Image 1: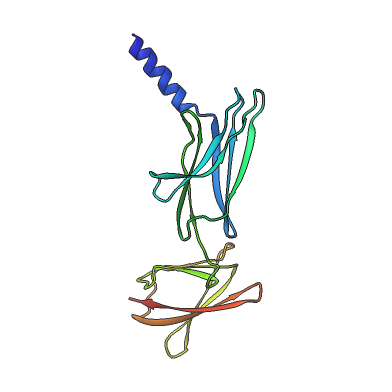
Image 2: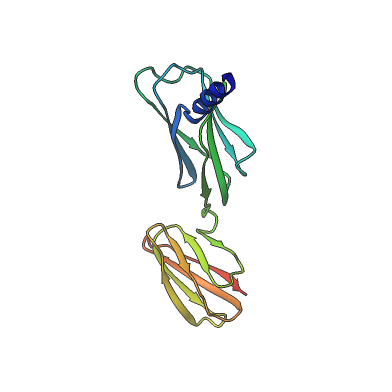
Length: 189
């Protein structure tokens, strides 16, 4: 009887973390993290932890002061100024001694060096390219002949599936609606 009571109590206490609504989102070259500490007794601090594999976490920020409120939720906002570039960033919150949040993840796309990020180069059948802003993508063959023009979504993502061009080297130009043209090249298998 004691075992079943303890098991139910322990499972309920693990399932009801005080850390709620953990979210992360890329904003320019930073990652914005937000969460809520629900009302209840005060805590003696919290840690914001980051991982590249969702298993091995490092402490990104260690807040060593009183947190939480008896009557109202506490909204916390944090900026990760050095997220892991072009990879997943996994975040979780820890309130000692044993309260862990759920894990949130977001891929950080760094387009600062070239003004674009080309996925899977060489490409096979899907062209996936992220630009700085909304615009038009023009694809040229090795002889400079315009083959196709694609338009991005609102976030500057160009996605075109089932590309039937022959294997070889291709050039592209992105004409953005902020007046800046960007060029590059890729290989098609």
